[in-house]
Image (cartoon, rainbow, N blue to C red; front, side, top):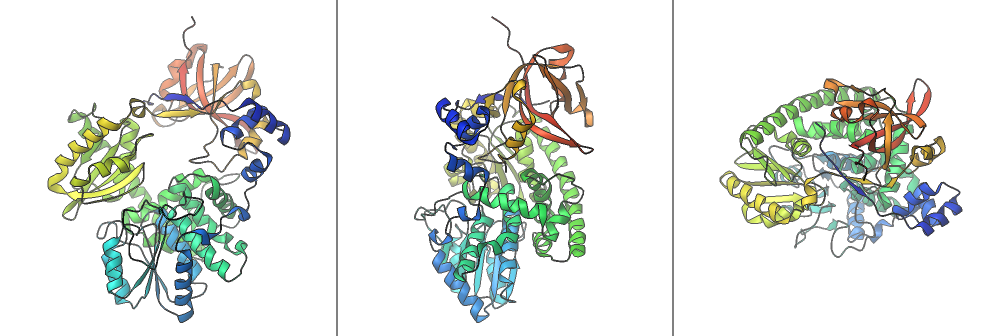
Length: 572
């Protein structure tokens, strides 16, 4: 059954600003209102929004320690010193390693890659990875998407005579690691103007700086932006500012000249053009499956492979891992849901579940699946060596990282973001932590955060929907966090009698809607099959939806992608 949703309407755009912008741009006032809501109020801001340019990227030398990082990498390349490119096992980490290694190998044959084993080493810069560098005569480690909290590991590397450059985007602790350079826009002393880069994005800024030092054109780096765009989409960072530029050009690469590995992962996906959603729901899960089910190095091999036939074979192997991942995830999710119900924990403010043999590679996905049923901060634990490890996911408006900080006395180690984190703790402290976390959540979470929210941009009448509107709406992309696809609310709507459920077990709703004689417009509501009784028999209803082009057999039609349906309120 689809979860009930709160409809939250964004503040109405300033009518004067929207009217002025509509006149300057020659567009529908509705579209101008959407732009004003997104902080676009002038002609120049609109030009930046609709036409991102490489020139809009910030100077990488503005990032704290960038000069030191560039100098050290140049020294290593000039002397033929061995370099180890180290990164986390998720999409952000493996794309970052692939990007950095591919770039450095254009100059040097002495570049190795290292992805830690999720099960034997865990997250972040590991002592085993440093030992690998030491055993192989490596003098410089470039750590990507991790390392900003690796105080002990950095000290260990220094004792081994190994220099360290950290390219991270996570929040630093009170102390920074002892490294040649710590590149992280979230450093309190870093004045870099854009703070929302992902780990691969920080890595890109380093190669941008290296390339700029040689006085070479930035356009040379365009082929690497498919990796950056994939990481931005997968890591759920805002697609605003600099990220918007990187994704815009990255999608262009994917649509016209993708690297063999990404092309192989997109086989079978027929699109007029690939969008961020294809990266998030097609490419990213398969890259992640390598690190979840086997080893992240498999993803790096795929993403750096230049031979299309070899890339296809590697992609087939990863596809098998992804199928195994899906089966494992579904089994654990069902088990966890039963555990919550049988334990009488449905009324708690948090979900914390544990079983020692759950597969560590999928517990983060399971946490997200549990939130689809019980919308509350969720942690899924499994055994990892002699400790317990968890993946944590949060709900809108609740800072998970701060909640874990409040439980720090029960935790061995943790890290992450507002909405996603990982942690380890002693098995003997599980019960204590579970109750402490519940107490923290219960004391801090707002009631509205316990119901999923749909943010509606504007009300609309179906008479305002026409092909030109849809064409310009498409140009609002790339869509993602910080720039979601515009959502509209309309009602009363009626179905023409076409409504029916489709998909497995009637999970989805397909209908054709009209409003005051306008229409019909075809519509699809994924996961809304149980709402059929609300609209059958010509009953009027309200809906929240995005407006999209639907391409079928060479023809284009306008389709409403419905996110939620409600009965019309009683009159009077």
